[in-house]
Length: 432
Image 1 (cartoon, rainbow, N blue to C red):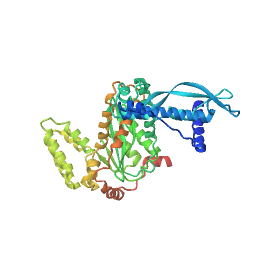
Image 2: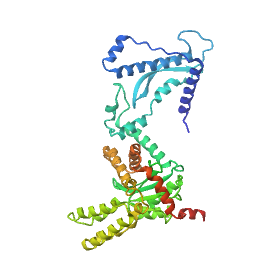
Image 3: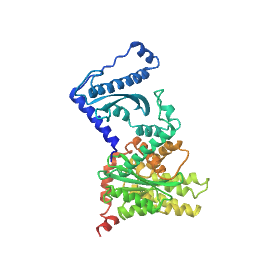
Image 4: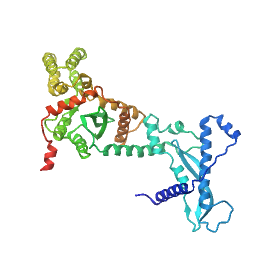
């Protein structure tokens, strides 16, 4: 609900728009050449800034003239009169610049707001400017020095910048978490959890049938557990994502992720375990001396195009690991079939590079780490979610279509042919 001063501000702007529509008064700016040359010696930017400030004065004075008439001329029908001026400010390029604001009072002694000043005062969205600058790596402490264009600008202290960023990042996180997903047609849904400043951040990313990547949502938890993942998928369902449509689910291998996907998408939903995570888990059991040889064999097996040949190569490697390190062999065997889902679906190698792992999300998190490098202290509340959400939105702007996106239509056909009709448990529960 708008506050009284916001309502008055909107009325003033509408009155100005009506005045311009009816009379369309002209405003003429005349500048002495000597003064302009003085500004030009400091650069074209200084000329534009100073001329802009004078133009603002002329626009406000023209509106005062329309409201109160010409100065020192009797007007029987006068409904407002001049009342001096006071200090105000306009927002330019993310900074507050002081200006003199003329005041007008009605004949019944009420302040009359100027629509022109309200527009100048509103200016550019300062919160959006702050968010963009901080996402580019500018710290709150250096923000004022970096963006100051007017020597007399103010309102750029660290606390002000922080407040503006909190406001902007909270709004962007809210938009991200409430974005409707009804119209998305996804061929794949990737879910991964990454430790971030003592917390687990679980992120869902969708790949559309046009090959474009979209951040769908995120959840913060102390661990990667079924509750956190279930809440994330439940939120996607509530926002319109249809889990009955056939698609590939690419997971990092965690049991909580696997159980949650099967709950929402059905037991027959095709799951691709991340091959990178599998490789990492196997190698973690081995000594540094044995890791290079086993890594080469793993890479060679997953690089095979044929499903049968890839499975045979991994089976042979499993037998070799049983003699070398049974723990590594058991790690390879666990969920082995699901690491070959892209092979079983005969996904072309170029497209398989993306769908065989959750590297897309990890790449996005590398951008999040860059964005967050200036944060020195982490607090409770929504600070982590706001910063991670902002970083993911920055990463999303840099996303390109996946490699091999031209083969997605063939993948969709394979999914439709190989996935039996299996209504997710969550839908059956709702129906009952």
